[in-house]
Length: 279
Image (tube, rainbow, N blue to C red):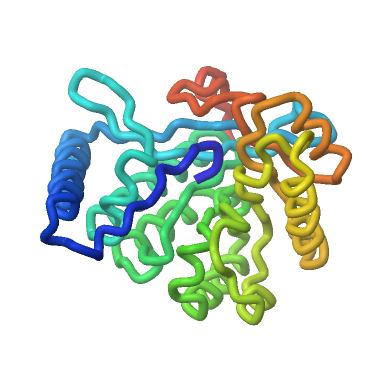
């Protein structure tokens, strides 16, 4: 998910009965129980982070909704602390449903808003998630064209043919798709030519210190070249310093996202503004 550093992944498949394997398994079970309880108590929220235009950072292109769960005392827990544990289970699909419901509700309430919501390719065949999407799009004539669904590179490559068909169906209805964390996975070029993503989000690992790291600068330039060739809108993730933003602007990135332009917040400016009726 953009704007959020990911925890290093530990391979728990080796030595599941070792002390380390047992500890990891117990930690995952505790995490799933915590998320289950938060879902049942409706302590799940979206935190919103702005994505700004590189040519004019004072203008917001869209907001990304990042899923959060709240502990009973109100402490906010970011997705990086629980998504790895729940992603492959049905509770991960429930999280996707709630995120989509909240994103679509924000679009229905704020006619001038454009938002992106993260999803897993695993949710494409989940009946409840599909119902949430259909019902939300039907809530207003412009909701679909203001929705962006973000799929990580690794998730898209799990079932590329299914993702391609799903994207084609909903792009015809106005929904846009973003390939998230581009560069962090192993996208096969033969599939990449068929995906037709609207937005390409370059993984923040390549953005960090781009003004002083020639390797990151070269890799980012290569990823941008791919995006421009396939006519995709490009977003640089995890921009934290003015020097990084300047280099990215000079390189021709379309949008910038990161703490430099705003951290994810449960109380975004658009939620404080008076609601306007659709025309």
